Amino acid sequence: MAADSRKMVVVTLLVIAFLSYSSYIYYRLPVNKYAVDPNAEDGKMVWQKYNCNACHQIYGLGGYLGPDLTNIYSLKGADYIKPLVNFGPRTMPAFHLSDIELKDLIAYLKSVDASGKSDPRTFTIHSNGTIAQ
Image 1 (cartoon, one colour):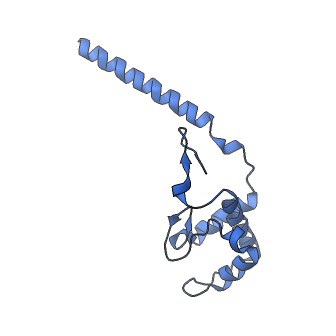
Image 2: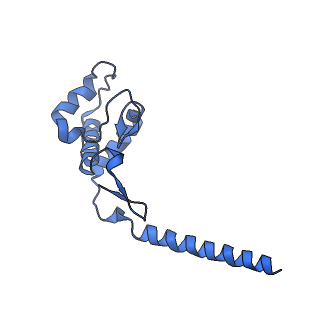
Image 3: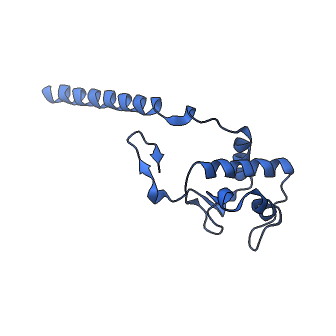
């Protein structure tokens, strides 16, 4: 009987620790610190609609047929990105996006670029699960 009561105490302590740590993590997340551009949110939907992640990477995650696009906006700019998306170089298909879709996709790539560099090996992982460079 004593072993069963010890098991219950251990389980109770683990549950309390889990709930406490979960509360701590979610309370301290930086999600409310930054304003999100509505065009960038729509641009993420364009990114998903045309399955860009199948060939391209963001933060080193995604396909390997095309280049990592995390920092393409600061490296090349919108004037470079627009014709590539619309007319497609080499193996990339021409998507012929509408002006709104193209503007939103550029806003998404700009917001991703503003979030940092793409090499995950340079990230510092904090105890609350967030990362920094």
